[in-house]
Image (cartoon, rainbow, N blue to C red; front, side, top):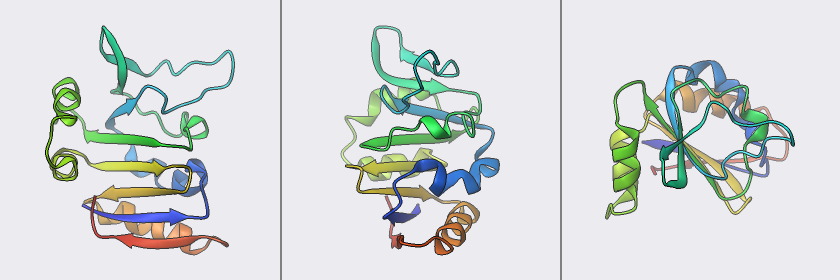
Length: 152
């Protein structure tokens, strides 16, 4: 997987709405606090991966653009998989035990979004169209630094 690191622009929707049309039809795996809907609203498209544990949530429906404005902008990771290609419960269970999480992610994920300490967003994918679309979108933005990431 290759990636892009976006510094100086911490809003998920500002950075990635340009690819919402390209990430339709994927299955999503997120952590429990990946989204912060406004009061009275809920992320109804997400369900627990494990009934007795609320660390991981999944969706087999498109969550973007609807949830784009609710993405938590601090310490976040969103993992996307091709439809029916991966058992998300097995993947999530094995994730923490992997010696090389980067390699594990690269083997299964179509695209990954990571936010580190509200300092930057990174996108990783083997799909060059996704990365090039984001790069063109960010290149047009002011006060933003874009850095190529060699891989997740």
